[in-house]
Length: 192
Image (cartoon, rainbow, N blue to C red; front, side):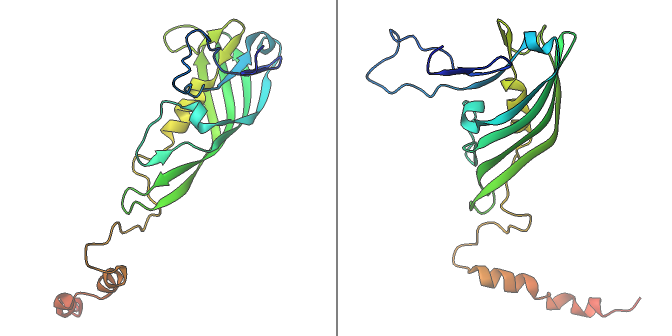
């Protein structure tokens, strides 16, 4: 096994092998995505516990968003059980996502935590997990749930007011919103 792969009896974190005759010396090689694989033979006997982390950029190398970047590791604590022709994966996933607020464009870090991660993934059929020999790749299931937990429009806070209008200070905006509109004061004093 080469330097691009790690293997133990129940877990394999590996990267695809590179054919040196195809690799070009004129341009740097693209980053090689890692995968989270589990040994199916060991799952026939008992469930497997997996604890560790994988870089978010390796988990979803094709994820491109103007407001979010998966640059922190995704920590996982998983239990994998074989159920007939499916794998039941349960546990928790945690990471942080570098974001820009969709209202004010301020940079912030969004914690993402899936405490009750659970997926039943078939080993055969259209929605089957990728299987290579004795190893099933759990990466697509983990990737899908992490990406589905991300907000469509990340906000630095629920009270974010967005960008300030040109020529107006933030203090003036806050003061104007704090002062009640005097035109309605007569109606506010009405006793019904």
